[in-house]
Length: 185
Image (cartoon, rainbow, N blue to C red; front, side):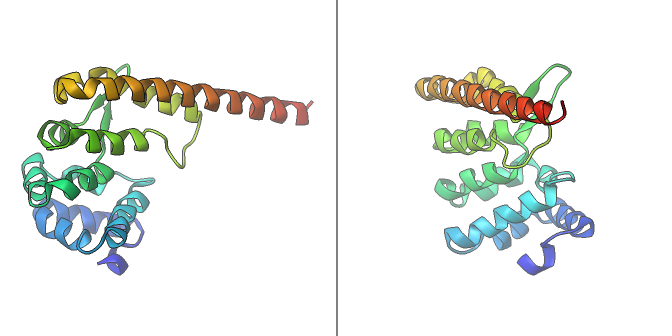
């Protein structure tokens, strides 16, 4: 499967069509094997969705949850690594329906939330990385109804850590901007 969907627009369309019609079979094929082999499946979604829509967005919540339930300890975090976790609203971001379902149904929602929080810090981006992380961090303000109350201290700590990361990123961006400005004076 890896060689069939290793890149390109037509491959993203193919994966999207397959997931739309046979989501469980495709997810089973892409995430079979050991964790290092499963990481290849996750990386396919990352590469294909870099500049296109995420093929995993077409997976309905019910089959996604059914697939996760077959091996809930591993599959809920795996699903969290491939779905689009947020949707833009008029003024900010909101959890996607798939993200809400994963957080609400996972036997260990902390592991799912940890995957999302890690993804709040993009590895490639345009514009201000600090602004992206800050915008994503605001999703944690609306997570309370989706997770058990016992998880809220973890959420509070994660927010505090993200605030520190944003501050460091802003400092770095400011230094880079100054250095660039000085080169052009």
